[in-house]
Length: 162
Picture (cartoon, rainbow, N blue to C red):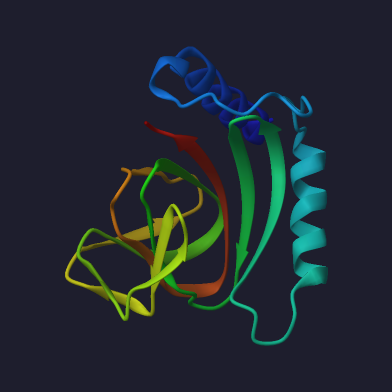
């Protein structure tokens, strides 16, 4: 229902704007649809897979190279991040929390060739998140879920940029 509309809309946006994406990877497998039942099942799986003290469990909702939509099941505050070659879209499936966007990473470390992480962010703008909210984090922009009210379930869509 609502999940289908949001996922279809985001996938349509990504496919129609492919000129902005770096499309070097071939399509390994086509998974271009996830039903509301699929998403509900992924939430249950993430909840069951979560280990004590684990801040986030990530499950793949859709994958159509080079794009990927993930379910993020969060119960604790995790690290801050900067994606140097990706734009990241977030849709709040359920729950509440706060995300800081912008500013500077604290205790910055290189996670891999395209991502930085940190223990938090200095500066930036805090945005309260609640079910149904939608936001975008531009590439090279620090972002951090710095509070979670119980459980926060997000869909994150990563869009590669050149």
